[in-house]
Structures are given as structure tokens and as C-alpha cells.
Image (cartoon, rainbow, N blue to C red; front, side, top):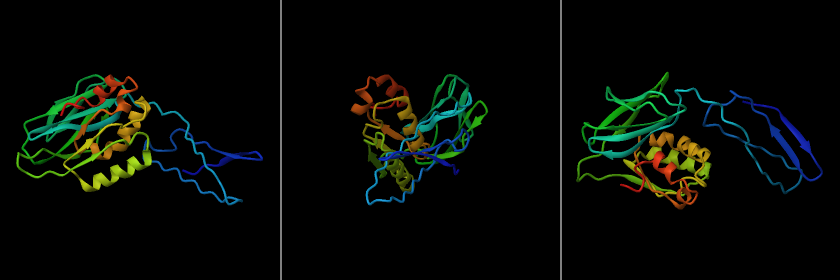
Length: 231
């Protein structure tokens, strides 16, 4: 959406403020573009986005679903809802109970190795789109995987990396840690929003970095990524 800029200008700097009302932007995938025509040869920009997230509906899925612990006969799926609610995953027509809390996980078993399946998550009135995943092959088949990490708060680079990996479609990914800067809830929310197009179909093996550990958030990491450091 377009909005009017309200300038406040001093002798040495110009402050431009863009006011965006609730509901004017979707929840993700927004792009802020700034075009400047300076009167001098030198110009410096310090852009800041300051605001609050809109409250999510009780059954809304706020993280995930994302895949962990792939095996030849299944995979683990995990997701978080805005509040405690009954939630379930539907895999190949079979229902897996995800519990009634805010955090939900299911361990899918009984599938064929090296086979593509479709799944979705139901949570209250919320329903995710169908997403594909492939079970791990039996021993002896070659695998394609990607290793990356240290994305921290580099949102643009992180997003471009994820877009590239989705196109490459590896069998799984390994994140070597430092997924966030200070392990705050806001940073983790951004991490999972950026990673969603990848992790909804591609299992991840996560490792804890010092940026997850040094801020005393080991319990948060264990809740978000229960397979971390235990491959």
C-alpha cells in the first residue's frame, strides 16, 4: 500500500515518518523500498521499523509447521498456536493428535521409505495448506543436503538463502547454529517466518550456537527444536 510521508526537517537532517495502519499489510513477505534524490553527493540512511504485531486468533498457527528428525518410515512435525487449542496433523489421510497446548508435535510413522507424502495441520478453525515431504531412503542411496548457519538477524540475506534452498530442494538441511542474535521471542518468530517455505517440507537438523546459549535460553531452544544437538 502507498501512504503519505510526513517530513520533519532540520538544518542537518530530515526525518521522514511513514504511518501504516493495522490491516494495511499482510502478516509477512512485505518489502520496504526507499528511493532518494539527494541534493548533495553524500547521503546517509538509517531506516527503522517500529510497531506492534496484531493479536493472532486463538487457533492461529504462529510458528510452523516445520519438520525434524526424518526417518525411513516418517518424520516429526512441530508447530505453535497463539493459545492452547486442540490441534492435529493429517498425513496421507491419517490423523495424528498434536495435543491441546500451545506447542504441538507429532511423530509420524508407518510410511514407506523414499516416498513423497502430503500433510496439513488443523487447529481450531485454522487449516494450513497441503505441503509435501519425502521420507528418508534406505541405507545406500545418495542424499543431497545443505549446511548453513550464523544467519542471526540478517533478514534479507537469510530470506534470499531460503529462497535458493527451496529451489534446490535438498533432502534435508543442517543449521550449524547462531540462528538468532539474542534468542528473543521476536527474533525466533522472524526466524521461523523466514524459514517456513523451506522447513514446511524439508527436515532440519539444528545445532545450538553460542547466540542461542549465551543468553540463558537453553530451555527455549529445547522447546523450539527438541532434536537439536541430539542427531
